[in-house]
Image (cartoon, rainbow, N blue to C red):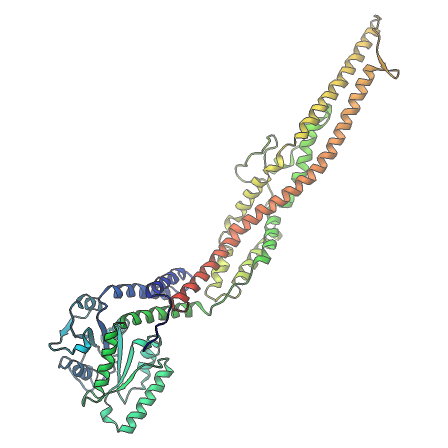
Length: 537
């Protein structure tokens, strides 16, 4: 009694195989991925055809008695029997109750079909094929065998005492079909030519060879198609397989597992990627240096002080400051004249990265790729390394864009600038009023006109107090504003540096780390799909 093992169903395994083949595209050899996809497509077609019929094929070498066995099992003389020369040129089918098997045989491309007139009820649903010899001198015969061996539900290999150990059948067919042990039967024919003791030795040796091929547990039946010895046991075995109506599903399951094995063999031993989190800071630092972040941070501080002097300086001298270029305007970052800044159209005026900076950036990107690829199979590691550099051509523009937009907040005008500027105009007006008052007094004295009484503060005339006080107050306000601007510039520079590093980190993530992560996720999905396809979940 067979123990049913719970696991992914056939539909899920087929879908997993298709997924693995799609994920392997461009990473593994194209023929391997195409073969896996073909298996999935072929399996889908087979399961859509008659599942009440079991297609069993008699395959063997020239002289193995395969056609004689076919005639004995069918009770007919359908197959032409030869001794040393291949006589079967195309496969033919014998049907036990073949109603509804037409589409299946059409798909198998079997033109010669024979419905048995008095079929054995125990074999109802069996479609028995007599294949050409796999070692035929005719290439077309061998190709026909290869084609049908890939699609039939049950494989019955007919061997003879002389050539049962022939490497041609073991190396070319039996060993590659190790996954198909559940749908494989091995028949040692012509045992009537051996003494009973020799039969046992041949069967034991054949069992050893099959175990070496990975086919342990495969039924081995000794028969004589000429005398009928062992045929009842073979009929019973075929009846059990046909009655279970599971050979087609077991065949497809083995095909899926074999295709998954081929994908894994092409991929290489499963592996896991190393962590790249420790390289993120190094990558961000290299990109920040190459993109001119230190220069921008310095310009943010200087630009803040420059605009503060223009906004809060003494009105008599502040206009001179306007002739000096704004550091951020010189770099084409932000709009000093607006409260919120404006996005730059085109690139900034930051100098291009030096050769040393480019080398540091390339090294950091390469280190990320190498670290991520470390531990992966050789077939996937190059894809991860390519992913790290996949957007390298657009990296400079992305970094420049990040800098130009992130730095806009550095041009916002603090509210105290307006208050300080208004106060400067007030003290300037005070000094101007004092100057005008003194001028008027001077004019009256020059014209020898009576002078009006002039109020004083501690014997100092008010016009003089207004003039000198306004001038000194303006200078003092300017000095205090410059000190505040210097402190504010340092603060703005720190804020800008933090924001720029965050923006550069986002670029590093989007253009370097995310492609690498996507490739690693693709490999993880490929491995998971292989596990499901091989029914190892």
